[in-house]
Length: 318
Image (cartoon, rainbow, N blue to C red; front, side, top):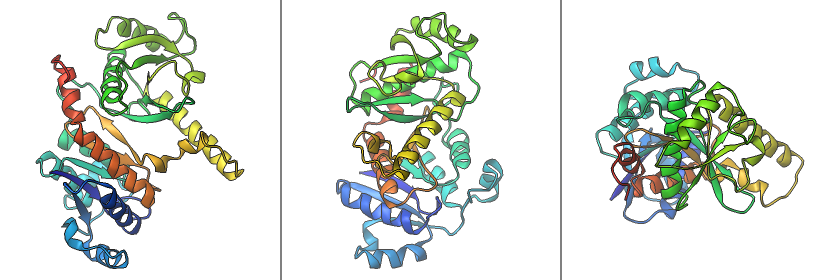
């Protein structure tokens, strides 16, 4: 039985929307999945009653302590060991849950990932990735999108492998094409980082490197996995979010642009750590929380972190 941990206290609309999202996820998940709700039990009970669902279908780890959005990530972990976030990471480290997801303090999520469950052996820096809706209807992956503002070529090389494993096992792309974000298709184009990274990726046997891509290639079929430093990736991510916001404000109905709605995929995984951790947007409401949990289930079900560990140990990935 898979056990999925959810931070009920994390996010701008917790605990109501997180509890509603957990209930919605329960109705979507197989019966052999147990949801472990970490948070204030007394706040959850009225919502269970309102939604006509029995408390017994969940496991509840009671705590009222919360790491707020404005708190310092590292200090808050030390000062609030009984917070919903800290308890979630402890349970994941101890193997008492198979995944942990939260819409809470992003910095604290990264601290927990790095110092509680810790990076997989051989990983220089874990990354966070975001899905790219392709015009053709499929999905691509962009990483890193914020954790690593400054990178060395060896780090981007690892991002390419992390993205490849994710694309194979979550996006079901047999031989994902890897592109390096630059300012021109030619391999001599770019800055010092991209030029050196290009040569490394060309010599990496475990990826299907197809060369440089440009900003205009984010949503076409040129690459399935696009690699960049976190500074560049975050700028591109926020620009895409901005365009989606403008389209919605202008009440433009478009099936393709509707796929930019973060609520539909809920959150993004931290790739390269010893466990499944999903970070959701702080403004997530019930739909996004539900999809965050479903995302964590998929990653845990395929044992994504184990597949990544195998890839970095040079063992064949099954």
